[in-house]
Image (cartoon, rainbow, N blue to C red; front, side, top):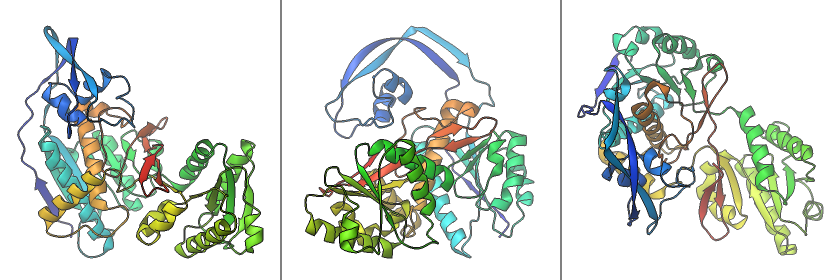
Length: 443
């Protein structure tokens, strides 16, 4: 269980060894069906960032390339080329060395889920090969009862440019110190306690802690639903895990002098209805993520709208509701539901479908039924960080707009914590529209 898993993906070595600066003229290009920003840039000898910079608006995170768009293609003047040689040991000039330190075994759920995440990392490496990005992968099994110090003693560990892991909080101290000592980027993919984030500038934490998310979500709620009438519905359970969110939301609304009403799942229909405005659209927030409570809410809303069909209602839910979507999708659409989440597998349905097919072909099995799908999570993480290292080297900071990034399910946007590492702040609302469409907004 403690043996080293080494997986080498043998790619063509990178051949570019200089950064070029060009004087530019321009030409135009009409976008054809199926073309991508990366493909257009690559076919014209440009990086995505260069193409985006030449086209106002294309650098926005929400930009979508459409068939028929006319875009500007900068044309380099060879006579104006100035080269700046890269050092031979610069990661931009050689194969990237990626380490994985996670429980990679078939003993329990942790191991099986992390194996799937690891497979997503490998699939991203294979995709990057087609972009000319070469990656060597070193993977170590680091189970809950394992000694990570033994893994860190391996000579290959100190040679990594980036390490994905750990899964367990008790392994953080040793791994954080190791990465700081050797100048290695450490990507923490999942929800563990990592106080080292406050002091170690090499750490990138993808997971966002509940306290921070509650503050962010309540603020964005107040911004997004300006002019609406909030209705907060109590589930009458003192042990509800969502009371902290509705408390933060009430504080945010009160700080902005936004009025709201309170009601309860146990209220009689007449009392429940009195909490709703007939003049403004209502946004309903239940202080529970449990499916049973959600079903009761939908029944009460059904009764309300049958009695008062002119009342306008939207529902604001929780990330956990995404795992209940199959059974509740009709109600999500009926009640114009917004679900806050840092991920959504339907962001790019075609890309997700293609990834699932490749996973099936490569590993002869379906992805584990888990929310979020972990192979897609690993794919997005590896694509983001390996592209970042390839383009920016050790200076990559994960901020928005650093390169064209079309996530399958997990948008990433990091902010630097003063004196410490980098925290992911990417966020979206998954909106189940009344017309049966689903959109993602505000990320």
